[in-house]
Image 1: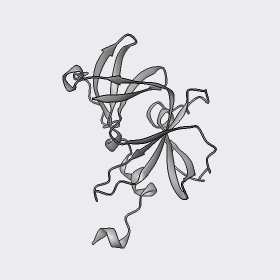
Image 2: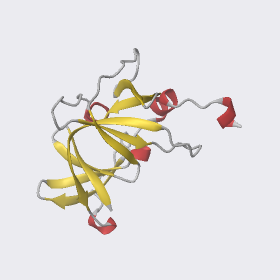
Image 3: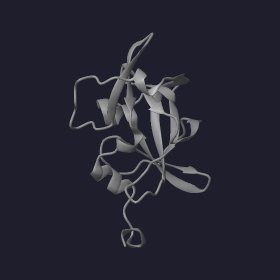
Image 4: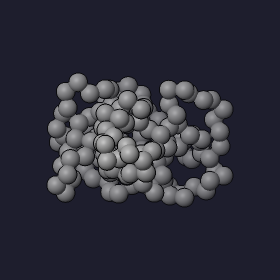
Length: 155
């Protein structure tokens, strides 16, 4: 399996590349007032607005540092309705991909109720690298705010 290596806070994490559409340079965002922590804003992607989450702010409570290696990772976010709208993820140190097998990741032995997106860990030269499940990244209130259910989808 192929993963995109990112940094959240001081630690390395791995995002599976399957939902990744494109890795973009960091762009200027339209800020959205009164949004929950982690919601960085939105940007125009090929004529359509796309909401953006700052992964560091969402996960460790500190906004991503604006570095040359900070990127906007565009993913397809799978909803319960099976729709897959685009979602932008700001992450630091997006500089490489890594290949790991499913058995390379093992349970950390700790479950964090408030972070269902945190998965098992693998070891590399940096130490432990934790897998992030993009499809479980957004808490329900944030997900529902970014991707409201329309009447056409609720029937």
